[in-house]
Amino acid sequence: MEEKHIQIRNAEPLLLFGFNDIYLRRIEAAFPDTQITARGNQIFLKGNKEAIGRIERIVDELITLLNRNGNLTENDVDTVLTLFTTGNGRTAAYAKDTHNTLLFTPSGGVIRAKTPNQIAFVESASQNDIVFAIGPAGTGKTYTAVALAVSALKSRQVKRIVLCRPAVEAGERLGFLPGDLKEKVDPYLRPLYDALEDMLPLDKLKGYVDRHIVEIVPLAYMRGRTLNSAFVILDEAQNATALQMKMFLTRLGADSRAIITGDLTQTDLPIHSKSGLVEAVEILSGVSGIDFVYFDESDVLRHRLVKEIIRAYSDAGNNEGQNGPVSTVPSDPPTPSDATNDEES
Image 1 (cartoon, rainbow, N blue to C red):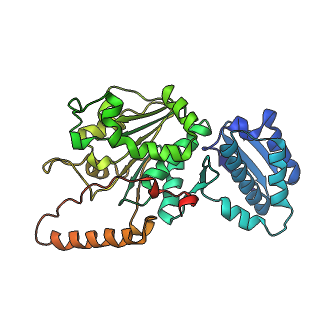
Image 2: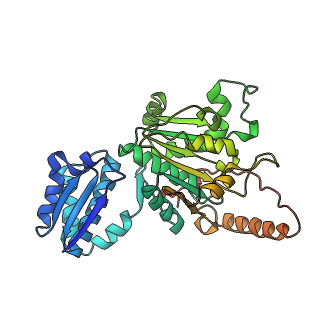
């Protein structure tokens, strides 16, 4: 007999377990030699190793269904139980197909972590409250981060999403641009809107934005706020100053999580300004609850030449570094083609 516990981080336990834990009781009935106990957001299992492994896969699949549909039914539970207990040979392939699934898009596509570093990123985000995702453009950092945020919102882990970016090209002094605040900053925040529009129906996204459940703001407008029960993302963090980075990280309130994405090779700050991302890596490495995941050209999911371009610039930078300072690579904000979306692969 073995014992194991599963912590539910990406689904609402009450919806997953069912009223009076009815769904857990159905699973337990399918494995009569296994004991299942629910406490808060944890499931405690006691039984043989094979049964516990199957129950873990069943729970993973039910979480996937819950995040896709917004609820579970007894028929959903029975269907998954049949799939994982009949031994008809489909289980392994089905489990592999749904593994690392983050989200289902409104058009029926699947967003999942594909590359080893993307998978490591997703796993780290499930275990740490603050995760830094660092690497070149096209590796899916921003897209995966937004998918994690939407998944957390759908599964009621958080009550809102806050996405922000530094608007360094305008020095975050946007008053001279025409239009209201939204019109002034939209060019800098557009990649975040694009990712959200891939993942949520437009009418639902508009409702979320109108009710401030989803906010997309310039980094400068985060000052003075405390964000409780929120999933907060700082994108293009290499363009945040050291003071801005500290300001952002200290906005987190109770039950909140943060992801910071950036590319250390594409800093647009003035030449004598130190990137807050660089300083954060130096200061925060080793702090419990904060993790750093690094991406490279092997994670690029764009055109095949993007990998070669990144490698060429990296090689050129290493060579120039031997004789003098390396020039900054022009900024290339991520687009939805960073995606781990199966429809675009």
